[in-house]
Amino acid sequence: MDQPAPRHVVVVGGGISGLAAAWFLARDGGPRVRVTVLEGAPLIGGKLRVSEVAGVPVDEGAESLLLRRPEAVELARAAGLGEELEDAATTSASIWTRGRMRPIPSGTVMGVPADLRALGRAGILTAGELARIPADSWLPRTRIGDDVSVGRLVTRRMGRAVVDRLVEPLLGGVYAGRADLLSLEATLPQLAPYARADRSLLVAARRAREAQPASATGAVFGAPRGGVGRLPAAVARLSGATVRTSATVRELSRTPTGWALTVGSTRDSERIDADAVIIAVPPAAAARLLREHVAPAAAELSVIRSASMAVLALAFPSTAFRRPPVGSGFLVPPVDGRVIKAATFSSKKWGWYADAAPALTVVRVSVGRLDEETDLQRDDTELVELALADLAEALGVTDPPIDARVSRWGGGLPQYGVGHLGRVARVRSAVAAHPGLAVAGAAYDGVGIAACVATAERAAADVLRQWGNDNPW
Image (cartoon, rainbow, N blue to C red; front, side, top):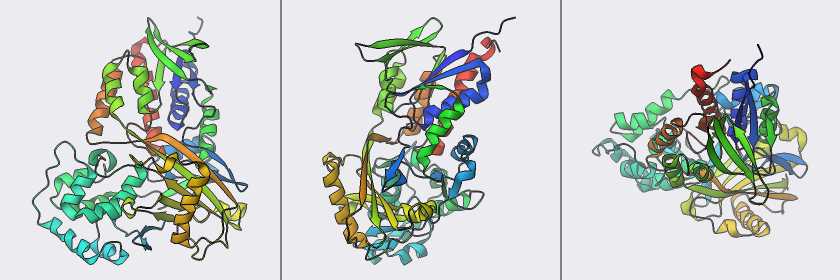
């Protein structure tokens, strides 16, 4: 008997979520599945990209894998990068606030304090601001309901200064967002159950810290030598999928046997038929594709806002600093009014720079967050000059960089507003009602690489499961 033709699955989006979905389809579907990845941009990888600055590779987007979660590390190993994975050489970081570098205190959960002594030693808060925190132990319980913003809860329990000086640079930095708008349940899932169980947020943060798992090596972050931006191409090769770039999907339509995708411009479009489709693009683009056939999911996705930011990579002679960089970098509270929101000392954080460029110090600087796009409207030269002015004050930079690169990520970070988990559940429920359709990406369960990979595995499993007993294999 002839074997039936493989089922065709099209993945819309060639970022790490879409490429990982292609791999999981190949891994779990085997020869019964053929996969095509359609990416609208000229390059795959989405926000994972690496290019040279002063002759050395520097990530343009995310630059590390969270080692406490297995998904991204396991994917890197499957893609042949396991032998090149290295732990970060240092993760000690500072907060530049009130004109000084101050160590990030140990014992916080994304800035929510769990250890008052460590917080006091850090010198980030004034004596009066510190004196406000113990009121958390006797204040009436704060009603969380279905969800609450992190900023509202922490302000109520510990005072506004904790939000402004700690939570905003740490949690807000991850999302390029605002703590007053970010969901407790979605952005701090490790803290949320304890915050519900304990009246004291300080006790809740302490319990969350104690329950936090460690990686096998005890390290928090790792990356393959040469940058995380190497991962997308490796995963694409691993998947064996047909990958097309500059292939924008304009429309998704139902057919009697599956789905049809309209690809390309209105003047030069083509139709691609698929038995199943995984949509792995940002929320606004996903909403556009789903609007006609899965309107409830499109409506929910259209509510998710996205923040824009830029990452500046600056290469300096190692002699260009009056105060040499120490640790992995520093964060900047928005309340201090600086242009830069964070700086990473890449050549200190990753050991391979010592081999590749021992005389260079590479600093990556991030600019921009939700509703603060004014600085991002400046051209590259002016944006670099503004960042250098901040670095001159923070680190005593005396010489201009020998090379600089500006990478702009318009709408790159989805915002997990209050009620986000319920919104995601409604999206998935609506999508699941349409066989042969699934969603993946940073808009759902986390913006980190591991979380994106997890959504990809779930989407691939959903597609394969939906075929059920109708599966000829």
